[in-house]
Length: 421
Ligand SMILES: NC(=O)NCCC[C@H](N)C(=O)O
Image (cartoon, rainbow, N blue to C red; front, side, top):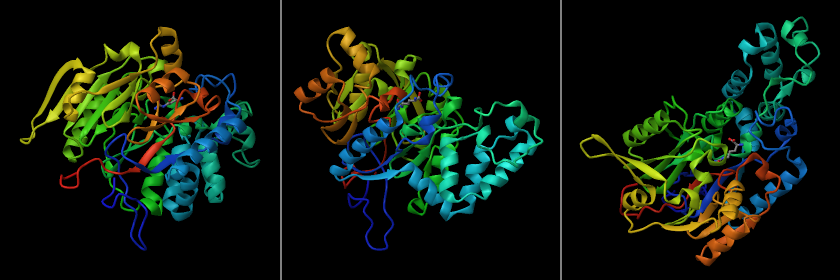
């Protein structure tokens, strides 16, 4: 969201970032090209690391490169998380300290090994440190001299992790999100993902590109994941509460965005606590200013608590009532159009599982979607939505689609210029 409509910096002017909807023209996006961290997945650890299988890494990279190219082809500036991380580590000694402190856990490693490991990491060039912070490190990869007398080192198998890898970095949606002109670092619920936010925090704090970027939801005491947060329109948020984001997280986020003047209404949407519906964006995403693509099995049951703060500062909670009704009212539109994932139950269930409901809007009525969801994509097109298809056979093994794999950093504002944002 920019005054000028573009984040492209004029000579000397800092770029302006921000997002006030799901569908405003996408200008800048943060992706993570999958890399060595995916090579850490084995049949023994893939469940714990939240992957359904073992992706073919080279093919996953090709699919991701094609995804990035589709975005670039539509004029979107693509930022890659590993590049930003390395640049932040080059720019700032404090960033290095922060990344190392989050990765080295003395409670698990013991003090001798933790100290030697931290010392070793402090001496690494930025690109190598960036790789360790994302791909992790095994005991076999420890430098020979590190804590050779450490009991912890002796008792671990060489393939065990000294630093856990972060294969879910691919899903940049979840570890930070922009709301209005501010960025929120989230609080991830699953242990396998918790350290991801140390990297997004570090990037937004120390990368020169984001100097001066203000924060939203700074207290982040309870879990809130970006996949649960939909910016239905300027000032209106929907927050899923289920396997990841907790009621306390949704409540804290609502209070924080009210305090910061970033929203006037927050719809809190209970979703089943199941892997297939881990985030709100696995069952519903926006494809136009007044349209969503939605899993039909939840269409009639999805409900919302509406939280508002009035001008006097008092907060009210209404509901629960049908989500589609509450959303249309909060957005100030008569009706939210619903495009669904397919009429028959089996196709709908299969395409929901394969992220048919997890599209990324590049502009009102233009979305990126996995090609495999043939029925859903046809239904989107029948409803006038342009669908840019990408392959995702390998990317999808982590259970996430184009929306999960992207964190919009700048979109054109949907707020009329005359209204305050
Ligand atoms: N927004 C999303 O739905 N993100 C997908 C995250 C997938 C990842 N394997 C996870 O379980 O957290």
